[in-house]
Image (cartoon, rainbow, N blue to C red; front, top):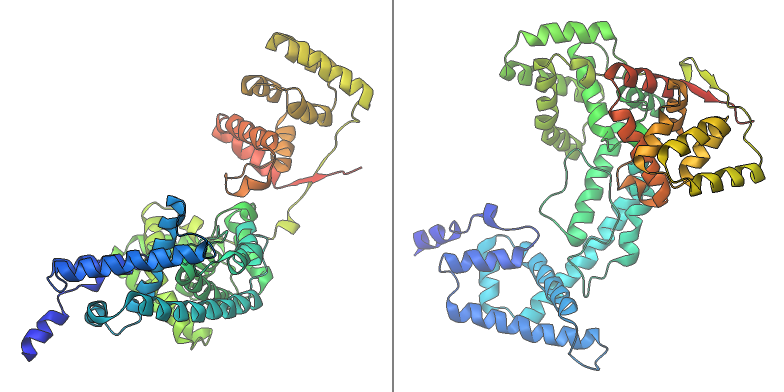
Length: 457
């Protein structure tokens, strides 16, 4: 009897159980292994339907149990998520199956709701802590997610009828993404991970992190980039170069030397060196927090893969970046001649709008538009096609293209959500235009973008 029970305990593999749909997956596994029979499954399903009718009536304030199909489906998912949360809290899958055999759906649901309340409270606590140890950075997605996006969850989350949903705007990607979780479980785990990432970054000056990310890309503020991963990678580079990790700067010569040294090692040896370097980083920074140790350990495969790939492709300088202080770079002053007055500009635009042929429009623009500002304005106002805009951009010199990119940088659909449709369209056309230029000219233009200083007079 004892042996049989031991064998039964190992029938359900936790790897086959879904974190998002735990209730449904455990029913499936229990039935597949004969732990629940047809009659028991039917009883559970009938209880779920009756409980859905009860919840639907509550949803309609007791007036009727008749609701839209979409709403009923959402409430059912919410119910099953909440029950699954309770079952997941039990010691193991066998205990969960036993509870399904003898327990009542409404009682299991209520126990799950208590757990949800506790997790919402914990999530609020971690949200406060994550904002308290927030990295001071220019990165848009990081700031938008932490300052506003996650806050939406605590205002919009409906644990009674939509417990399974993640009502938040989260664009910032963690080094270790949260997978197979939803609802409050997702938010709580995301905030726990973000707090840990912030904790590691707090060992370094915000200015040093800014210079590091600027070395990666001076436009990092608009990138979907993980700050923690960049900082950890930089500390590993410093350690591999036998330098202190208290600062994040790495010299180009050191990186070149590391490239030559690591290129002679096989992948296993490189991974071993990285692991030893990680231990040194933790020791030098005197990091004793177990959760941070574990998080860095979990991050190592991803970071190690990036470093090994960089060594094999001779691009280690793009992984172990040299910090840059953008404020110390020489600036090029961009001056534009005066724009035409409002009345003349309106007449000019009206002429363009009635032009039938693109060639006539281009000739008119060359004749009358004498300033960068006028041409920039007409790109919005003259209702030009992409082909016509391309012809107009051909008029510009490199510095003027650079200034246009600086003012209207391309952003992903996620980042560009607050832009007008015309602004999004112009940015897309400018990007398409620059993409078809030669590599040499692209490098020249983007080099100018980083050095432009505009006279705002």
